Image (cartoon, rainbow, N blue to C red; front, side, top):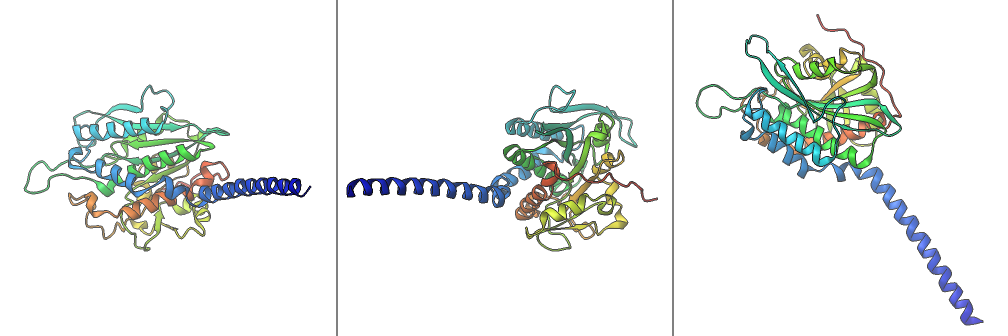
Length: 335
């Protein structure tokens, strides 16, 4: 009888241990999912690879219509394919190719927006767009020394964010459909994003997340970013709410006199009513590298870029999963 009792006790103990183990594993998995997922899936190694590739001399400044931007386009396409994104509606590839003639020019240019899609689940008919421009200024025609406008901060850093967020949401899932767009010809007057906007049903787009110059510490200090057009919808307040307790803060755009809300690709969708805003971290009023050949990858802070991308992921999480819907944008352009 004593032997039977010991056997039953041992079995019960093993069952209890097994249950405890499963409970512990579930608890640990939950903790990892909630607190480590952004840092685990968005790491500085991948971020650095994207940035240094897109801002390399080999890309020749990524001016629209050049061999350099074609190399950048191929890199972004290959990353979209590796991640597993699908093509945008009506397109048979990631490219949305079109022709245009820049202002003060008679030469027609052929270029392309690079667009990938991650279809949503319960709200797949509602779209969120995550974007950045992959073009820059190209090269100086003559001179001594460095002739390449590498555009590391402007805006290889933003495209790096788009690629990192695509990989992140592919791994954790999304309720709303996410459109990932690398726009061309932003530097020529928001041409790529304007072309994209003409072909969409803006009513289906619930938010626009644009990334521009996220590679330097802003005037607000470390672990901060600022958002253009903060007062034009409640998009920024939603992000602030989601970032509470994270150690990262989002502030309204401090450079109102620069009219930045209308100077990046978010404006093309905002003009259609979409609550589309731009995240940035650069103190643009004192940035000595802005539109200079000195805008090199080596001048940027990988931690700032990585932490900002992680903050964007966390800050927009409730929009991506359908719990929050920003108010439509209030559009009053500065005269």
